[in-house]
Image (cartoon, rainbow, N blue to C red; front, side):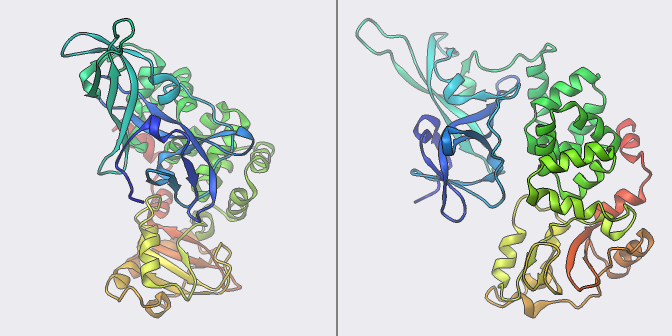
Length: 412
């Protein structure tokens, strides 16, 4: 089947949703969008998918790899099976947008929304770009049907002024994670909590990663415990470990118990290391491949959008198991090298025998290591020769800069 770049939401309702292995996850029941200020098209935040026992869950659009005429296919990664709860600033297309009354700008006539088309942009985002609206008809007859661009109707956008939480949240959705983190710090506590509560788990996790740990702990403490655990699962393990280190032992253990075991275990491992060592700075989820993987497979892995540029600069080859701590670490391959080799070549034939870091290596040693070898990421291997993680240059910079560098940047 061919992948579509524009789809009417009513025609998507009921489509089966599959994971990357071809196993059916459930059926699509609705699309969640965020209305925006003015005439800007709403952005699709995710899908409402009905799984077993009629439970409806939220699947972020970032996990959707393709929408075909007969199915929706998701990418790799775990799904949060928590029951879907609509947040402030979110609108359900089928449940709330359809049947809304709007005004057609050109004719000033009233009409009813009967369908909405979402379209994928070059950046990969999905926007509601067109509406099918129908004018009231005479008795026994249907009114005229129009296919209009989103900005050709009035009555759906949020007001450009006012202090309503919905408008505030819609405005902040347009900011990148770092700018939104700065904006949150300038808000009164009540407003800050409203915005944090309205953001989806993945977005809030990204924003928390841009805040000082003390601020992260304050915001996390305002969330219901189950929600806080869900947000921690969406954070990078090293960021989650840094945040949990700010909490009391009781709160930390409670949240780790509420997290999924597969998500909590890497965080528990990282909490064992001192924060100013390679082990305390590393992430436990670098790109790991087996010795029989091809260069084509390696290049496909580093294209995954959730990878940071530093982690995407290298792949690490290890014996099974491939999750950290892995089997025996064999070496790393730089992406620049892989781009110069035939795609069918085994990645194990392009390894660099660079001596890895040890988890207990102090910050000064890690810094010298990066400077000596001109790296943006480095492997961390334990005494048994197993890869336990990778340190990226942004984590090193976080530890080199003053503790209040984010606050200084915000003020400056």
